[in-house]
Structures are given as C-alpha cells and as structure tokens.
Length: 306
Ligand code: PSU
Ligand code: MN
Image (tube, rainbow, N blue to C red):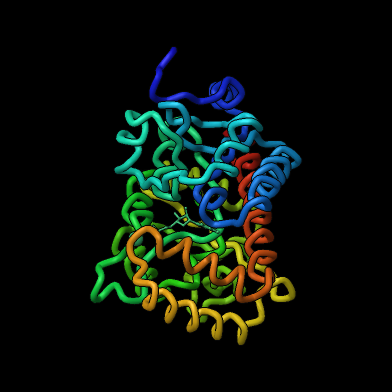
C-alpha cells in the first residue's frame, strides 16, 4: 500500500505485520526538549537501546509531506539539526503534512500516529499536562486528551515537573487514563524520583504489564492509554533543592519574557539545562534512555504473550 501522507518505514511495517515488538518514540523531545548537538546523539542512543532489548524503534516525525513512522539516520539528523522545526500536536498533523515541511511530534501526535500504525508501546521522557497557571491561561497540554483516545502503553517518568502535578493527576483520572507505577508506589516527578503524590497500582516487571495489556483488551478498556510511570533511581535524580530553586527562577523568567502556549515547555526545559550546568540534561537523557529500554521489554513481553 502506497500512501503519500502516512509512511511507516519498511522495517516498521514488516515488524508490525509479523507481530514483532516495536516501540514508538517521539521527535519533539529531540527537536525542542534537548539542546543541539546532544539531541542527535541521544536520539540514536535511544534507538539502539530499543534494538538491544530486541524491539524495533519507530521514531515518528513529519518530513517531506508525510507522517513518517520509523526514520532513517539521515532523517533523524534532519529533525535534530533543523532550526525552525515546528512542534505539532495531534490536531496539527494534517496541516503540517499538507504544508510539506518538517515538524516534530509531541506525545499527543506520536501516540495517535503510533496507534494508527498498529504500534502498542511508546516511550517518552515526561508527559505534558496542566500548567501551573492553568486557572488563568487554560493551558493544559493536548497530551492529556489524546491519551484518552488511543490504547497505547506509554512509558514515562511521570509528567514534567514544571507542571501542576496534582491537577494533572486529577485530569488523567477524569479522562479515564490508567496509571501504574513501575516498581514504585509513588508517582515519579520527572527529574525527581518522587513527585510527592501516590499511585494506586504497582507492577514489578514487564511481564505484568503484558498481562495488563491482555486484561485491558478482554475488558474492553484498551481504548485509552495505560501510563507506566518509571521513576529515575534516587542516586540519578536531580538534587531536589536545586530543582525547586531553578524551577521558581524559570517560572519567573517565563513571565518576564512573556512566553506562552507551546513555547512554555521548551523554554523551561532549556532554562533547566542552562541553570543546572547540564545536570538536568544528564537526568533528562537518563530518563529517556531508561524509559525506552523498559518500553522495549514491555513490547517484547507483549509480543511473546500474543
Ligand atoms: N518529554 C521530555 N521532553 C520534552 C517533551 C516530553 O523529556 O520535550 C515534550 C513532549 O513532546 C510533550 C511536550 O508532548 O513536551 C508537551 O508540550 P506542551 O506542554 O506544549 O503540550
Ligand atoms: Mn500548552
């Protein structure tokens, strides 16, 4: 089938058709969440971690008028190196495709496109959610709604700690998105191991997640995401005092600079990377690599079960 708008790579299409394990990966964290030139290196490392666990990586992005699922190294480099790469949520994907340019997909758009490609497992760093001033700005990431529409397993280190975490947890509950902690009872805090909020359900290994995938299907609850919250170990997390200080400072600068909308998340992540002299970058890379590895184990366990 040749479809000019939606193009899974040959490798990804074949793996999906054969029922082999595949892990979807997003491109916004490459293009907007990590600084150049580390971002290209991280993108490749994440893909190689997925392969080492026995799964096929499928990084998703808009390139040359197509939503692409599974990128070549050259395509990955274009996303990582390009200035002016748009950041697109699910609603923006058709316009970005018709526009013919290059765009990076967020959690929302990646989850939708992965689902469409028949991929059941996705790894990212931290989810988008309710922003701290949402009471005034109404800024809630499109990620949340989209997670209620696609039955994908989403491995993440919770939601980004720059957000209003308890409000985001409330919204995830309202939207019916399932959450389990991976070897933890605490909802992770992205750069921090523990956000200070509990999770009701806990799993101990990838096999248990695979059983959940089956249970969800049998119960007809596989129409929304299952979030597997995977915390950074305490010895790898960012120093909590440093974290809180840099976050307060970042929010202040955000106001001074008048940054709004989809520029808020990249602005704050960039502030963290500068103000912690790279410590948050190291933590962010650890998060992404670990989540990709766990996602691959889950994809392998799920494929074995089926
Ligand atoms: N996780 C990271 N870095 C990121 C993101 C997630 O470690 O840059 C991105 C994801 O693409 C997520 C987006 O969907 O931030 C949320 O942006 P917004 O708050 O504008 O919806
Ligand atoms: Mn937003």
